[in-house]
Image (cartoon, rainbow, N blue to C red; front, side):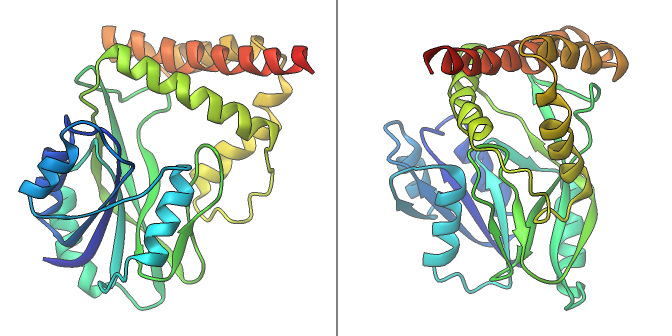
Length: 274
């Protein structure tokens, strides 16, 4: 096993957690579940799979993850952050096993490529793939930035490199659950908008730095509601989202237009109330 501890934040993940843990057991020495008092079978399933679970009240993803880093007495050389609906491909598992013990000492962080699946289909277009995320880092070298939404792992020192292969984000949630989750996200997005910080200095990943700069400096300068429509048209036509078929049509409409329109509606509501 690679000298890695996986940290997984959970709440009511009974549909995903077994596949997630079994996948992580293929290459991680330790697995740590930080659970926000699940009311489904998540804890029972974790117990059967004999992984360590710590229950703690959820405030936000960043705070929960940083608490795990600071209070879990992790003794592996590396830590990997994983969502319960994520799975590592055979190719990435092999790459991690082959390379991790030979990473130069000056390297502290490793960026991985994410594939997003929606309704069982890999979304390859619309600017969605590849999504580069810093997920693997040396113990003690990194933390999660404190943001309401789109928080990223920040490396405090050392170099960052990229691995070549993918991990998969493929939730088993129904469309209703997906919509409910994104409605919850929209409240966090509203808070992030109202308290937005344009400082990009903490982000070493150029892709995410560019995304955040565009969001703060370009997207939010476009009038309310108009920007949701323009973003959808950009994603679906200019970035070729229409090539993702029927599932892609649904995904790009909901994620690029409906969700952004919902966030703008809540921004508008807030302004009217004030």
